[in-house]
Structure formats: C-alpha cells, structure tokens
Image 1 (cartoon, rainbow, N blue to C red):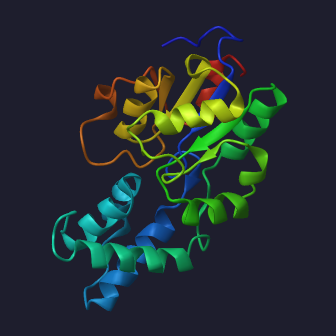
Image 2: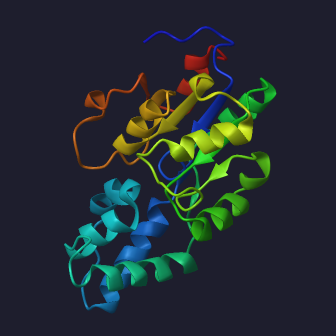
Amino acid sequence: MSAPLVGRWSAVLFDLDGTLIDSAPDLAGAANALRAEHGLPPLPYEELRPMVGAGARGMVGKAFGVAPGDDRFESLRDGFLSLYERMLLERTLPFPGVPTVLDALEAAGIPWGIVTNKATRFTLPVATGLGMAARTPALVCGDTTPHAKPHPEPLWEAARRLAVPPEACIYVGDDLRDVQAGRAAGMATLVAAWGYLGEGEPVHAWGADAIIEQPHGLLKWLGLA
C-alpha cells in the first residue's frame, strides 16, 4: 500500500511487547524458571517467543499445556507473573530502530502513545525504566479501562488522552487482537512484522491497512522518510 498523505494522521499509538520493546527474553526466562520449579526442563526460546503477545495465558499455555478453566491454570499463572515481576528489565530493550522512530515522530510534532494489555504493575516499571513513560501522556494498560484489547475502549482512552479523534490515529501492533481493536476503534492499523505474531492465521489475513517489516517503515508510510 502506498503511504498516506502527509498531515492526515494526528497521532500514532503502539502496542508495547513485540512492537516497541523486545520483552520475550525475560518472559521466556520466567516461563522456564517456573518449569524448573516444577522439575521440568527448559523449552527452547524459539517455542516460547511467538506466544509473548498472548501474555501470561499464552506463556503458561505453551509452558505447561494448560488453559484458563483448567484446575492448575490460576496457580501457574500467578507463579509465572511473580517470577516475571522480578526480572522485568533484565534483558528487555526497545527493538532496534524504535528509539529513532519515536524521536522522528516527536520532531515532526506527531504525538504517540502506548496501548497494551499488560497490567499496570508490569507496564509502568518497564516503560519508566526504558524512558518511555515520561514521553507520553497516553500510557494505557490492560487494567486502565474496564476492557482490554480486542475491545476498542483502551484505544479510545489513549486518543482522548492525546486529544486526537480516533479516526486520525494509527495503531501499530504485532497481534491479531491489535488489528481487531484498531479497526473497531476506527483507526488505521499497521502490523509490526518484527514482533511475535502468535501462532494463528498469517498476518496477511488479519485485515490490517499495511504490514511494515521494520520500525523505520512507519516513517515511510507516514511520508516522513
């Protein structure tokens, strides 16, 4: 798809894990630490990485083969989250190119925000530690509103905080739920193909407005590069 006209878009919203930051090493580390506590060997990182976008549900599901509603799920989820909370920033970093993109957006006068399903207790320390929280008034977490993605309410809340109409926003994410939430909110949606992407249907079937292979592709799509 060709880039939109410069000036059409007033703000850019981003998913966090798998879009702005690579948190998979720490999340996979927590999953394997929990497996070790249960006497199980570690799973290969390559098996755990795609499930990061599904949060604790996905990580525990991959690591233990359980799902919400199973007898063991809640205790395993709580154990996983407790371990993860201790290692939030051990190896988590912005993806290469992300800091340059955020700088370019700010230089162009385009505000940006973060909309994640990650709970505030994890999001705020990570976003603060990586220097992102202080740069945006729109840090919307999984427990900020009564609904999480794919419901559009978190995206609408971010747009309200930026004082921008939803239809003038772009939402960038690496999970099918990101595209579903963005479309439901009336926003343009871009897939971050460098992210985790899950194990479901291929990204080309998600119905996004565009798929960008690297962070710099957002600037090209906006006509800023």
